[in-house]
Amino acid sequence: MTYEEALDYVSSLQHRGWRLGLDRMERLVADLGSPHVGPRFFHVAGTNGKGSVTSFIQSILTEMGVSVGGYFSPYVYDFRERIQHRRRWIEKEAFARLTEAAVPAARALEETELGGPTEFEFKTAVGFLYWREKACEAVALEVGLGGRLDATNVVHPAVSILTRIALDHQEHLGDTIPAIAREKAGIIKPGAPVISATGDPEATAVVREVADRFGCPILELGSGFEPLERDGAWTIRLGNVELRDVLPMAAGRIAATNAAVAVAALDVAGYRPTPDQIRAGLANGMPPGRMERLGTAPPIVLDGAHNLDAIRAVIEEVSAAGPLGAVVWSAATGHNAGQVLQTLAELRVSVIAVPMSHPRALGREEVAELARTAGVDFAESVAEGIAIALRTAKKSEQILVTGSFYLLAEAKRAILEAAGLDTEGAFEPA
Image 1 (tube, rainbow, N blue to C red):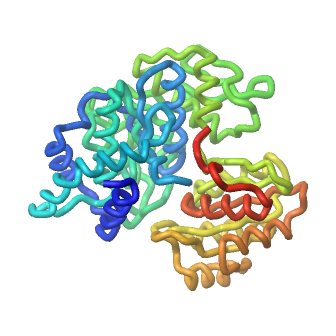
Image 2: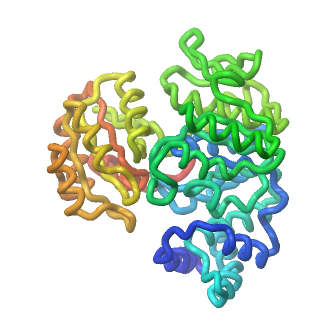
C-alpha cells in the first residue's frame, strides 16, 4: 500500500462520521494486539488549549531525551501532524505500512454487530501501532471529541489533564458547562493524578467531584500552579517554586497558561526537566495555528479559534499586541459559527467571511448568509478574502485569520503566494 492509497482508505471512512462509544475501539485495539498498553499516557481533554498542552508536553520530553509520541486533533497543515514521535510527523512509509497492517482488523469489525471503525478510530489505532513500534515511553494524547466516549479513552493515563472548558459541540456533549465538563472528565481513571485548568467554576466543581470519586489527587490552576508576569517575561509557579523566564511576554497569557499546565502535568508524573529543557521545549513546541505569526507587512496572525470562548481570548491577545485592521473568517460544521462571526462583527474592523475547501466546511451559501446576517463582507474564496484584507489593513495593523483550523493551510498558501514566496516546504516542521 502506498501513502496515497493509505490516505484514500482512511478518507473512505469519513462517511461514518462521529460515532461516540468505546466498544468498537476496544475490539479494534484488542484485535491489533493491544498496542495502547505500555506507554505512559498524558491524556488531554478540554474545549480550548488541549492541542497546545499536548504539544508542549511532547516537546519538553523530547528535550529530555525521552522516546515520546504525540497525537493531535485536528491537523492544521498536513494529515501526518496527527501522529508524531519526538515532534516529527509520522513518516509516509510508516503510515502506509501500518494502515495496511490495520485494515484486516478494521474489515473484520465491519462484519460484526459493532460495524466498521470510524475514520478517527482507525487513525487512533494506527497511532497506537506507531508508538509501539517506536518503543515510546510516553505519549501526549489529545482527545478528539469530548472524552468519556472518545476513541482515545481506551488508555489508562499516567495523568488526566482538563484544559479550558466552554460551550462547543453541544449536539454531542450537552448544552451546559457542567454537562460538557462531565463528558470531558470521563477521561479520569482511578488513581491517576488530575491536572485541572478549566477556567470555569462549574466545570472545576465537576472535575473535582469525579476526581474525588476515583480517588485521584488533583492539582488546579491558580492554586497548585499558574503563569506569572515577572520582569517582562512569563514565569511558571509550581507549588512554592518559580521557573523564571520560560516564555517571552509576547507569547501571551494563553500560551503561558498552557505551558504551566504542561509543566505541572510532567511534574506530577515524576518528570523533572531542567529550566533549560523547559525553555527549549516550549520554544520548539509552539504548535501550528495557535497565535502563529507571519512576519509580513501588515503582520498576519493565524489562529483556529472556532468557538466563542476561543475567539474572545484570541481577540484579547491580538489586540494586546497592537491594532487590528482586518479579519478573514471561515468555519466548519458543528460550531456556533453565527455567534462567533457576530462577535467579530462588533470589532469595528473589516471582517471578510469566506468559504473554504474542506469536507467539513460550511457551504458557500451558508457562509454568505451568515455574512449578511452579521453585516460583514463576503468573498468568494480564501485567496480573495486574503487579498481584500491585505488591501484594507494598514502596514502597522494586524490581520487575523481565524474561525477554523481547516482554514489555515489554505490561507497560509494564499498569503505566501500573494507575497511571491515559494510554498514548497513551508508547512513542514523545522
